[in-house]
Length: 215
Image 1 (cartoon, rainbow, N blue to C red):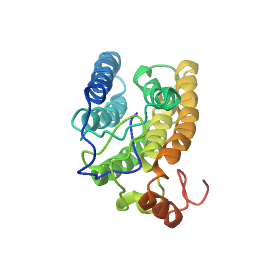
Image 2 (image 1 turned 135 degrees about the vertical axis):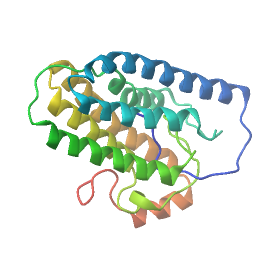
Image 3 (image 1 turned 90 degrees about the vertical axis):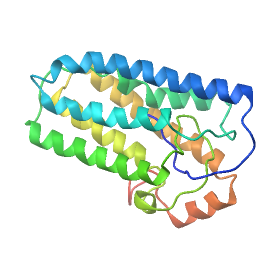
């Protein structure tokens, strides 16, 4: 779901009425879709308890968005919002079932690794978190020392772990689409963030955007 590779800004231009409306609409949409996901995944937990890990990961995302700090420096470009929504919303439509490709153990390890990566990255951001590209200040601690967008890597690990135990073409198409949108989303965020000299310096220090020693 949501993210930003930076966080921590405590000052900036005041939020306008349009900023506030967009901010609360984003939070309400994510909360509504999360409740639908909960209703869809919940009945499967008796048979496949490992599916609860997907709910843990998505709960973290929704919680951080709902209680985040606002920012007036949020991209208003329609394409940026399309990429943000395209990378965030598909995972909320995942559904349990299908075929288990591996035993629960390996899938669980992958999902837990993704969740731990998300938690450590979001702990660095604290309340500076959102879907669309926004400058909320630069963070260099935790997993941000290795890659500039660790939250997206955590999402991908969690989603593919879920797929390994609930493989079906519908979910596969959602995950592939979401990952493709995340890659494009990284480019949109980098374009906005590199206008900040502090982020440009950080990008020179941390070379890899998403995958350590690869990209």
